[in-house]
Structure formats: structure tokens, C-alpha cells
Length: 313
Ligand code: NAD
Ligand code: MLT
Image (cartoon, rainbow, N blue to C red; front, side):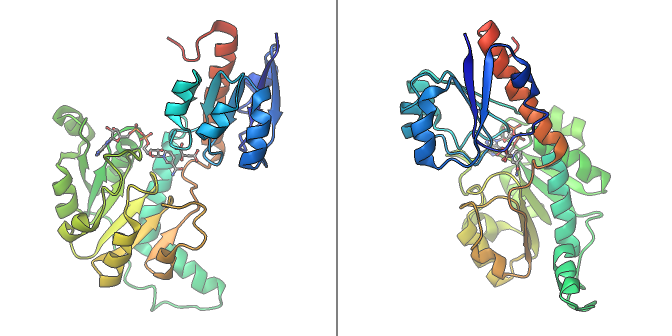
């Protein structure tokens, strides 16, 4: 029997080799499908592999009469309707580890670019301005306090790297133990400690009911004057309207964003502030991470169609 796998977002070609090499799997790649086209096509497939672009809605799942497994090449599964998948008996697997280093490195790059206004300075230079005045006012991160909300895989790696930059780190996570914080050399803090003591705040939680707008107007009110914010996790954990007001009042000295409440974020009004820098959801977009996550989900799908289980027990 041959199982048909549809890949509807761009995935690393090297990463999907395990699928291509399997005798019982046919791979189709179509990364240009509209939601209607996907809904029309999905009925032919046993597996669907996506990154974050494809929205796997209840409508699509309800039309996927043969679908057995959805593989998400990455961490966040918020683009997949998990209740609908459960209702229709479709397994969802993700690749939780493969992009941890890349996301942590991106966060540190954003933190340093923000503190030294590197993107703004280069933009001016590119426009012919040798401007050494406007871009004065960068700050050192040495000795500053970084507050981390969410001390899972990426948050912990960010903490480790920030310590290497001689920052003091406070971590908050409901599942963080004092022992683990001590081991990481991180202050074991509350959410309020992070808000009140930090010079920089970075967030590394999934987008859940409990984390939606965890950084909001009330949170900004508790923060130090001149705090800087980094979000490379998910749009929606940060209330963008509240950030807008906090930037306008000068309470927040800058923000570095990789993810947005609405993506693609081409018209985001936060970009009107010169203190805001951004990337278009690139946290996991390295050669290594894309290969890792594609390999992980490809192995899961192969295993599922050969052994009947997706993950190694
Ligand atoms: P993870 O599951 O390892 O860690 C998430 C942590 O958040 C967990 O330790 C959990 O206990 C904690 N958490 C949950 N609710 C919380 C709350 N209310 N307050 C504080 N902490 C809470 O996940 P990860 O691999 O570290 O990924 C973190 C986030 O980064 C996810 O949203 C993921 O989708 C996102 N991500 C983004 C990119 C990107 O391209 N920008 C790349 C990879 C991952
Ligand atoms: C993730 O959750 O893994 C990231 O958002 C990266 C991606 O875009 O796949």
C-alpha cells in the first residue's frame, strides 16, 4: 500500500529525504495552495506536513477523509485546529527541539540589535546618511537585567546565552523549580519580579488562554522607565495596543519583534516608531533548524506508516 503525503509549506529538501526514501510513501509538494484549493485536495492524502503558513482549520480537517497524521515542522501548533483533529481521529505531531538553538540565537541577535540600534543605523547609512548623532544613545547590556517569561527550551537557552553576555537574568515560569533556576544561574522570580526589575524583557511561552496578552497595559505600568521588550515567541502574548501606548509615552524605550498579532505584519503601526525593530517571523529560519524540524516530522510520518506509532516510545 502507498501512503500519500502532502507538503503544503516550504520545508527543507534535505529534511524530507526520509519520506522520499520510504518505499511505501508518495510525496507531493504544493506550497501555493489557497485554503479552498487545500480543502479540495486534502481528501486524497494520508498525511499533511506544514510549517506555520498553512492554517489547518476544522473545514480542511473535515474534508480530509483519509488523513491520519498532521506533522508540524516546528514547535507551535497554534495553526492547527487540535480539537477538530481529535474529533476526526487525526494525530498531530510537532518537532519541539529542532529549532531551539536558532530561536534562542535570533532572540539574542534581536536583543543586541535593539540595544545598539543596528538596523536603524544601517537603514540611515543605506540612505546615504553618515549619521553618528541620531543613533547615539545605544545602551550596553553588560550588567543589565534580563527578565525571561517562559523558561522552557528556548527561554533556558536564552538565559544561558545572556549570562555569557554578563547580564543578570530573572526567570519566571510556573513550572520552573528553584533548583533548576539555581542550576541555570538565574534568579527564581515571580511574574511581577520580571516586570518590576528588568531592563529587558523577553517572552518564550506558547500562545495559550493563560498567556494571551501576558504583557499588557497593567504589566507595562509595573515596568521600569526605559524598559526594552523582545518577542520572538508568538504574536498575541504581547498586547500590541498596550505596547503602542507604552512606546508613545516613552515608558518603553524600544521593542524587537519577530512575531505579531496579525501575520504577515506588513502594515503594523508599531513600525512607525523608530525605536521598534522587526523581522518577519524568522526565529527558526536557519538552514540547520529547517533541516532538523523537517527530519523530525518526516521520521515521525515514516514511523507511523511502517510501525503504527509516530514517536519513538
Ligand atoms: P517550551 O514548551 O519548551 O517552553 C514554553 C514554556 O512556557 C514552558 O516551560 C511553559 O511552562 C511556559 N509557560 C506556559 N505558560 C506560562 C505562563 N503562563 N507564564 C510563564 N511561562 C509559561 O517551548 P519552546 O520551544 O521554548 O518555545 C517557546 C515559544 O517560542 C513557542 O510559542 C513557540 O511556538 C515559539 N517559537 C517561535 C519561533 C520563531 O520562529 N519566532 C521559533 C521557535 C519557537
Ligand atoms: C515554531 O513555532 O516552531 C516557529 O514559529 C517557527 C516556524 O515558523 O515554524
